Amino acid sequence: MKDGDPLEILPDNKFGVVGQALSYSYELFVHSLIGDYNYKIHEISTNEFSTFIKTNDFKALTVLSPYKKIAYDLATSVSASALKSRFANLLTKDEDGTIKAYNTDYDAFKLLLSKHAVDVTDKKVLILGTGGVANAAKVALNEAGVGKVVFVSRHGQNNYDNISVHFDSDIIINATPVGRYPNNGLSPVDLDGFSKLFLVIDFVYNPIRTALIQRAMERGIRVISGSYMLAASAVFSARIFLEEEFDEAFIDSLKKKILSEKMNITLIGMPGSGKASIGQALAQTLQRPFIDLDVEVENMENMSVADIFSTRGEGYFREAEKNVALKYCKQNGNIISTGGGAILSKENRSAIKENSFVVYIERNFLDLYNDGRTTPTSIENLQRMHEIRTPIYESLADTIIRAHGSTDANVNMILEAFKNANPNY
Image (tube, rainbow, N blue to C red; front, side, top):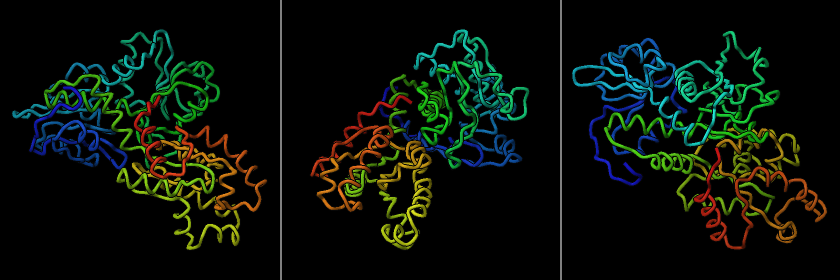
């Protein structure tokens, strides 16, 4: 099947995903992009899982942590991909009750290595975690001629307390949920000390650029986020239970759709640069929610930003600003306008970056001063602020828009940049 090909509507409600605490999951959204089949979310406790699988009349279920090993053990028939890893992330059930196990994580990771031209020959790979996707990755790595694979866990022989023993690793793969929504901002490891590291792969896809991914990017290390694995694994699963063929271009298109729909578009720039007006127009055009972080602070504190500065001080305001930034930037699909100084906090910058296509609205500081919409009382103060903040805006941005007088023109430039974005993560 190719992108855009019609798919017959399947009216029965016998497809879905099963796991625990699935607020982070994009499975329902992703399968809605693949075809018009009903797909349900099932949050099941550990003591209910076996009964649920045995007694429910499903056709296919995607299995998420922590049930991939149990799913494999419950199967009465096992595919070659599941047999290799002894874990299953897809179960199908025939009319006669036969439960068959598959591991499309293995298929997806093999494709990821090929698609991204990752040469693991004689390389040392550190896999954080020991669950289903970790084991699937190990099988694929061994088949690709990897030099050595080391599992790191909290309590195993190789753990986070003695991880310095493995500072000679070439590749790190995060197969844990650390840093996953809603616990954004956490990283399973500090990358300092890994002198040979040239690639970091994070299977977490929500947020899109995890703390681990961002730390690697800051060091100039190549990264691959979880969005490709998400798309590829879902497509390989659909290929099995729909008995349809999908080409690689469909997976690429699916990943792009995931990013375009789930990423926020966050506007940064100097005070008075037009972020709020441009953001409102952009939100209206895309039919997305608009969030102005300054307004959210005002609503929370029940006073204006100016009054907060004058009565409680800048430090108080920055803390309130940080709280709203952390709250809204971890969401997805929003248009967000930030305050001019929000980028001064490293924590805010990380929060903005993790789930956003970041747009720097650039305006000449003389134009800002002449408009009279900025808070500094002198052109010298404004110029000093502009000089300090401009490098931060530029380094944080995914694209820079040199603002025109026309809001529509600015919106169109942002839409064009967003459409043509080719994320390297």
